[in-house]
Image (tube, rainbow, N blue to C red; front, side, top):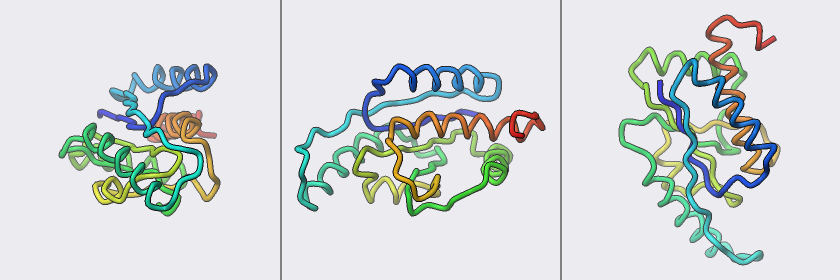
Length: 159
């Protein structure tokens, strides 16, 4: 299985880079894992609704260029469906079983995802109604993907 995270912006914090690197190493036993960063759109602090949409559209175009037609896409969105770790693990297993060996997760920038990216996604996933920094979400998502593989392998890691 090939798992890719497409995300907006560069990761700056050393502790987040180290955590993600650790999960990437652990995931190498189960899948080909990679993170693809696209640049964020520079914008002033205060934006009108139209300017916000324009920023999301530009970032969305960059994201969509990194997604191939055959990829099964999860969009991380607050309005997405929440899943338990066990439900998520079962979904990952089913994707592999039913011919979706290329799975992509998309994490938007600080303003969220464009309608075009949401439309391209096969499903939306939510990690709750909390607002989390999108850089931290990379680490949380990497850990949950690893946890899913560990659940599917019957490992005690999940307990």
